[in-house]
Amino acid sequence: MAFSKQQLKKFADLIRIDISEEKLEKMNIDSVIEWLDKLQKINTTGVEPMLNPAEHKLPRRADVVTDGNIRDLVLSNAPDNAGISRGYFAVPKVMDE
Amino acid sequence: MFTIKGKTTDWELVIGLETHIEVLSNSKLFSGASANYNPTIAPNTQVSMVDAAMPGMLPVLNEFCVEQAIKMGLGLNAEISRKSKFARKQYFYPDLPQGYQISQPAEEPPVVGRGWVEIMGDDGKPKKILIERAHLEQDAGKLKHDVHPTKSFADYNRTGVALLEIVTFLDTKNPENNSYITSPDEAERYLREIREIARALGVSKANMEEGSMRADVNVSVRPVGSNEFRTRTETKNMVSFKFIKSAIEYEARRQIEIYETGGTVSQDTMRYSQSEGTTSVMRSKEDALDYRYFPDPDLLPLEISDEMIERIKQTMPELPAATRARYISMGLNEYDAARLTESTDISKWFDTAVNGKSERAKPIANWMISELFAHPENWDAKNAVDTSEQGEARIITPENLAELVDMISANEINGKQAKEIFIKMLDGESGTPKEIADRFGMKQITDTGAIEKAVDDIIAANPAQVEQYKSGKVGLLGFFVGGVMKATGGKANPAVVNELLKKKLA
Image 1 (cartoon, helix red, strand yellow):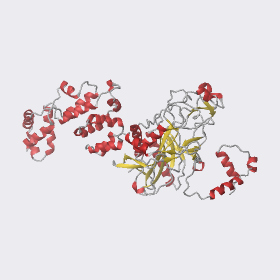
Image 2: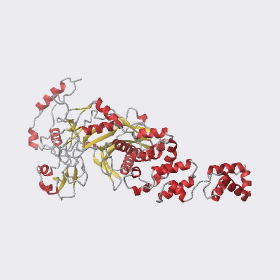
Image 3: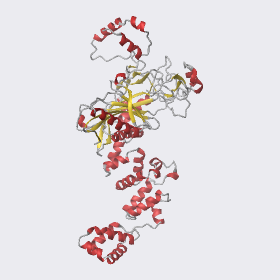
Image 4: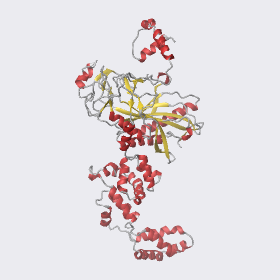
């Protein structure tokens, strides 16, 4: 199964990767798809999906406040400093959703 | 049944609700930052590096949030999954810095599976609304659009606080069971029931005004009597009962008009305008988001032991449905029981007033529903019970109403006098009903001799009416009763008056 340029463009949009037209043109992921097709053919009926190779159980915390109150530290990572003086992260103007 | 009259036929509604309640906890679902995000707290002070989605940070599950979910699940009579997963729901919006929301997979049972809640249906009878699932997920942050001309400002204090999303189940295989919501009023009663269960269990404040309860509303319509399920639309992020009811009705009418003009309804996501009371398309079906759920590699499956469920079961308080059943066993009808369990504050008030004396139940219920509910300004159920708060503002207490009811049943006062005492209490008259009765000389005359004299006087003074009564105009009895009551200053026992009059006029 091969992918059209439009499909590749759609996937790129979904994961927010900006790919130029030329790159899309040259892009060939057929070998990846072939490999995935091979995986799909394996009969996994009755096999529980393995989510993690580790044997341990999901760690859990007690409901105690142990973190936070580090605004300056958190905001020091902000790529845009327009909101920092007011204590906010600044992001491109977005409305709705 | 709730129907909407169309041009060609009558239509009925099928409604599904996705209700988000914010889980009460000290810290967030996957981080140790405080879960208190109220608006008075400075922005981004309750944010850890996990919440800010810094690379390399790992989420660690808050066990108490799981307990809260189980508690709510038990309150919804639901199956608790012994094993469930956390998944990433991908979307790019700056209110969630991760680029995905940690939720539970859409296609597998989450922590809370199939369950049901009971509400009062539009026919006044109990109705079971089926629940499909309830899952744990992260809440998003808040964006401010009005601070900066070209940028939005993000506050991540709420980011990562635990939410429980409760989804109703549309049993399409058994439509005749009527196990889903079919009117705006039922939607409101369902949401109120969810709210009361969450509050009774201490799982959530479930307060729509504060945003700790929000709902997405799915609506479809069909001709009355049909069992089909047509295409639904989803209206997102509704934050008041009033708007939800208005959105349901508007959306139903919009769909009916489409069908009646030969069109088809498309499975769109709608937005509701509070100012217009209308819905409009926010996202068409073609543009539906592809969330690309996949298991979160940072989180192993959530396993829940029987012991944990058993331990939580032991801590469960009485839930509204059980309270209703208890009230019905005390002799109340279903309507009264439903009204008195609209909030735990009301049912506590009622229980305090009845105080284990079931003969008080019916009269107290009547007084509460017909009198107290009509005077909300004089009666705050919460303050009436909690004597530590606003002692002065408590005008009618459960003890006062109980005393009033006892005075009637002991024939110390009649109903009319009780009403007068009640109104005096509402007006701020101090003292207990007994003290008020003494102060105003309200005592029922049960002494037959005194009443008999008044009866004789009335009969002697109105020979014409006596003649008419005897010739069959029995409706005149009220005239005589009224006369006697007036002569005794409203103090006579009406039952005794009635009995004596009938005897003497016979």
